[in-house]
Image 1: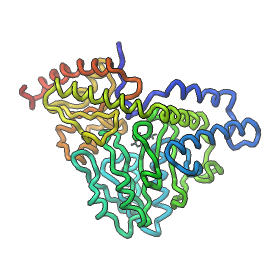
Image 2: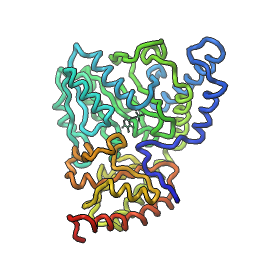
Image 3: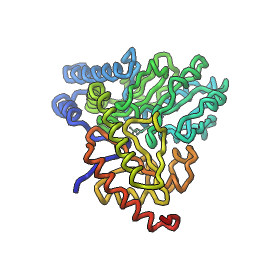
Image 4: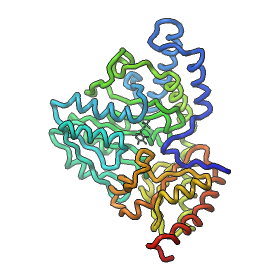
Amino acid sequence: MKRIYLDHNATTPVDPAVLEAMMPFFREQFGNASSVHEFGRVTRMAVDRARDSIAKFLGISSASELVFTSGGTESDNFAVLGVAKALRDKGQHIVTSAIEHSAILNTCKFLEKEGYKVTYLKVDEHGLVDLDELRDSLTGDTILVSIMLANNEIGTIQPIEEIARMVKGKGIAFHVDAVQAIGKIPVDVKKLGVDLLSLSGHKFHGPKGVGAIYIRKGTAITTYQHGGHQERNRRAGTENVPGIVGMGKAVDLAREHMAAESARMTALRDRLHRGIANTIKYVRLNGHPELRLPNTLNIGFKFVEGESILLNLDMEGIAASTGSACTSGSLEPSHVLTAMAVDAADAQGSIRFSLGKDNTEEEIDYVIGILPPIIERLRKMSPLYNG
Ligand SMILES: *Cc1c(COP(=O)(O)O)cnc(C)c1O
């Protein structure tokens, strides 16, 4: 059976060129990057090369401001816990949004138990944070604002530059989870005006288990993983050399192909959207109509359960998602759609299609053909639906 992967916001396949770049570092170039001998020097150079390349791609002026981690979750934890600890005596209030990834939300919940206060900003019907509410939420006690650049479930892109201007000059650290944005839209830390930024290799055709965090020079942050002197004493532990090299290569590929790929992706995404809207009644777009990732289409199908749609698509070889991979399996409606005031029944019937560089027009047309009979069949079984 033909298999079509439309779940790239959960993870992406490793690009063959990325795998090829990594292979020598599993084999003959296995040295510890901290070793002084030739084996170590070779891997140290490879790590530095990847760091330089990623830093340049993100507009980071000094590569030493980039710290490698085990992924997006660790980078998010590092930012929130590290700043909270470092600035504890200055204040204990954190501002974030209600639609963040669980790596941010659950870290904030943990800090609430430790005595910190957290404001979870509401979003509008398109998933945009309310800037007035944000401005009003900042107090003398606020030490950190953490807002994602692009949402993983709906793809909505936040006005990070405007938020940075609001936060700047108040002694508040500004962290951005850019995990979903990297490789899809331009990300420049200087232009955005952020202090901290998270990324993750496996969301843009790099390997799993490797990520990085940008920490602007002068940002108060406490290290939370102690041990050796790696990463200038900010993140102990022997470097994941193959992973770091792979993520560096994935950035090189993004640099080369992002502009063209994003245009192609937008066209495919909109083709899928039009195909669905033209053939299926009672559908709605979840997310911002324009300020949205080029690859992300989240559609609500009235009168049906999202899980049933997914299972039916899966039987046809099509992989999609009801939202975040991290919350699937729970019957709770998506916290993102709930925050956008999508009513619970509509949120239940929402499906996220997230496209990637290997998807073709034929695949999209195949999905457009498969979907209407599935939805019709499921609706016929629904007591709420009467044609
Ligand atoms: C996937 C994701 C993460 C977590 O990254 P991992 O590398 O999988 O730990 C964090 N934030 C967002 C927005 C994500 O999409």
